[in-house]
Length: 132
Length: 502
Image 1 (cartoon, rainbow over the protein chains, first blue to last red):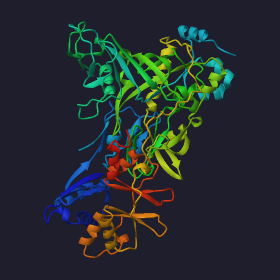
Image 2: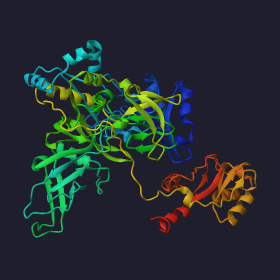
Image 3: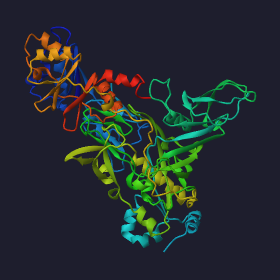
Image 4: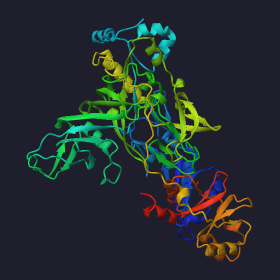
């Protein structure tokens, strides 16, 4: 399951100043895979992948440390009306989210998405959007 | 054995014609042989659905009261060409509105009409005795117009080059988003289903032949613009009634960073008259070859990095220089199939009969590059040949002196044999000064990844390098990387002075 963590780094004691991910891994023994991180001087946003069974525990621990956690489902959304099944999105995606079925219909495996956003402008038909 | 078109049309009228799509044909020929396939199959339908920029439509709006001789015309703020009589106009698919925030163009207006939406017509005129009105604004539906005739100057490319990008930045092209370092490949065209691939000799595809266009029954006018069947890049000029078209087969699109285009479905039915037609319609993706072109080269003649078949491209990845690179189609194969299948149904149910060309299209013709009468200025003509350079072991203070004395902001750094290894700017030297003597030699502060130009590079391309990299000078090197000059933004100003170039 993918979790989007966001935290502040403004104050000296904000969670963003602490090694929160390392701490949660050490405490719980759950292996957390960091898929994307965007951290600057004021705030940070990190997308992590955790085993489904441990997601509740991990989420609770992060929240106790002052990190806000959002479960990411359907990270990328396809507008079926606009999509013409061309496939322009396929090769720009680093995660192989998009594929064709035997009928050349475009299939979206949103679970693999790491919210990089490359496919959104690459779609000639404006059919893809990222969940905010 | 040969089969006449009359026989095929008689069978279509009877409802007994055997129609297959170009995708089904190779297996039929394998099974029955060429003679057997000729006997069995009457018509092969083809189809493609992809970006076809060279598309548009003629409109006749009807006369207003008092009447106006429209000189400039806008449809939803997209300008249409109005230099054709009082209330006629041609709207091109790629023409873009200047007022919309997001790219919106002729293709969008065409799609709005086809979907049944209202479109605002605005027109202006200077007013004449016979057409006194000076401006008009009204709302139109497709059905309100006398004619809405799609005429596409260049559609249905036989095949198209695949695209990749060897540079180190992402490119936004009409071939879609191209990732740096050959990170992906995009391609267009339906391969085995493509109309012209199934008749490369233009024996049965020519002027007057009925076709599927955007869901309507259309017709081939003749060769398309830039038709170059002699090099494998034949094109068609086609027409059809916009009022009969459907949104499923006509879609506006935006190529990010490039502009508006139109996705349209085109299908041509091919009468199976003889074994030569059988042979050409038995073509497979494996037989259709194309080049993967480096769109990172900003010139007309771009290098080919690999030659691949449509079967390779459709497999999802190809090899370039030993690396596996993922591919993306820009055209929809699923919808190309839908075109070929619907065309098949039309013929099976007698909705469309076939015709032979009233005029042949030249299968040998090659398109020419532009004749350019004004010389394209090259870097060598405006570069500064008096280059002051420095070697990497010299002291930073020497660099500072050279910069001051040479009244320049850029020092190319060369090795013992005069080859370019870096560049130092006044900014680098200033930074070194404030770093309290931590850096001593030129090599400690120089930029090693130097953006450079060549003497015969067109000045426009050098200017683009300056702009894209946010820098103000480029060392000019020869083929062996020896520094022969420097081109600064100031040298580019020489072009604007108008003294040397008109």
